[in-house]
Amino acid sequence: MSKFEKKRGKSSPAISTASLPDIIFMLLFFFMMVTVMRDSSLKVSVITPSATELTKLEKKSLVNYLFIGKPTAEYQKERGTKPTLQLGDKFADEDDIPLFLENHRQKVDERQRGLITSSLKVDQNTTMGIVGDVKTALRKAGQYKVNYSAKKRAE
Amino acid sequence: MAKKSSKDRLSNEVNAGSMADIAFLLLIFFLVTTTIAEDKGVLVRLPPWSDEPADVLKFKERNVYSILVNANNDLLVRGEPKRVEDLKEGIKEFIMNPTKRSDLAESSEDAIVSFKNDRGTKYATYLEVYNEVMAAYNELWDEYANAKYGKDYEFLTKEQRLAVREVIPKKLSEAEPTAFGEE
Image (cartoon, rainbow over all chains, first blue to last red; front, top):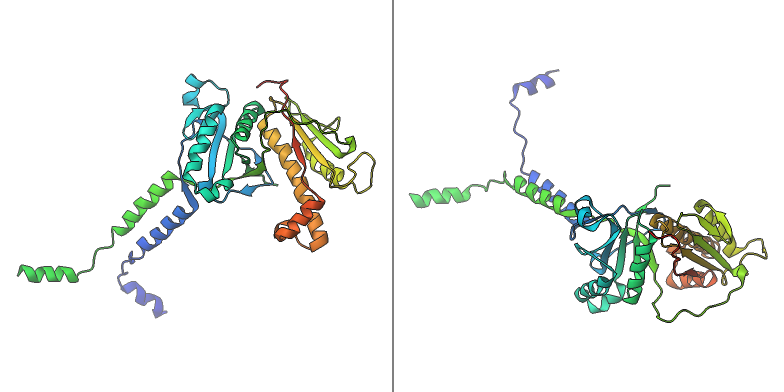
């Protein structure tokens, strides 16, 4: 009985915040591990379709991204609504692909150049016309490893 | 006297109270500038480009499983309309031909899946069909691997995988798309 009363008498000590920085740092490191730097802002809207047979892309430095989709609202005035290719952070067309791939290839270690994958992030409502053209351009440029980016489909 | 007071200060602890705020700032900075790494997709290998038109190879009709997708996203499989949902089972039966039907593949080594789309086909449909073909092969490899080695395909060694792929090779041929329906 007196056990409870005793406590009430004491003034409660302040909670030590000394370990708070450590906790926050832990969170910080966690997020630094699981995230990647956002390197290009999207000028086309891309909602990738869903699929089941997915492969995870491991090495970020060995992947280059090609976006295909409708220009977002702010660019529709000058670009229209036709699906467009975006390389890096600017609009492009198929002729720019070889230079884009070569620029990326230069940054990669020579021994790993065979492992470079192109990730095609294509909006699900795009028609295959432009995708086919991009595929042809990739084949002409000698980039055969291609990943059709997709979400995991819930079954 | 000044010396003495500075000595006193040195012995004091550094105030770590603001450390949490600094860490928070860093944390928020990283949250804003980064995206969660989630890049998954269907990995394919494109064929090399050649300027000359490819040789016309003749295959027996029973060994080719042709899939055509038109600009309305309808499927025509071996001359008959089919739903995407039924595609996987159809391909599996075609490749393995368990009942030795005369209109399905002679053997799994000879089976070829041919896939042709239109320029007006929606990308989602294209990928769905592609996904079904991949799924059919993956399931067949798993079944074969389980029957022969007692485990799933992905747990096999490299040599075992090659052995499996020799019996059931993935022969997927993508034809140049037609251009009846423009985007």
